[in-house]
Length: 110
Ligand code: HEC
Image 1: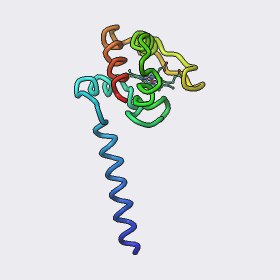
Image 2: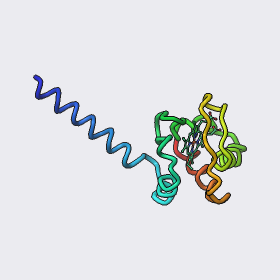
Image 3: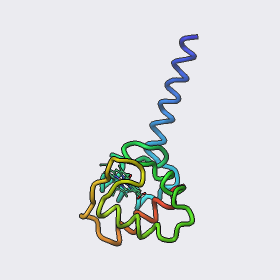
């Protein structure tokens, strides 16, 4: 009995680890840029960590034609209030084009 339980626990732990290592729907280049830029210290693809999961962001802005520009600006300049009181810090080291690509990528994550 105990043995069965611990195997199940181990399997779910492995499943979680795999989900973190290979986020669904990520294109390799954008994922690398997001990793390099430190996005995953506060975001995961699906669920809220410090900031919203990228799939949650994609769902929230579905059909919003202003979302790509708005999110690109927020990625570069930081901001708060859309998801709660914790602010996202600015990433002014990113080029405008990179922030735009990341915004488009996040919006495609849902
Ligand atoms: C220090 C933690 C932290 C880091 C690092 C971080 N974020 Fe965020 N992010 C947040 C928080 C907190 C929010 C929610 C802000 C709000 O409520 O408006 C957020 C919100 C967002 C949103 C949604 C914005 C909105 O207005 O709905 C996007 C898109 C996003 N982050 C992308 C990124 C990308 C891309 C990176 C890497 C370049 C990144 N984040 C790095 C904490 C972080």
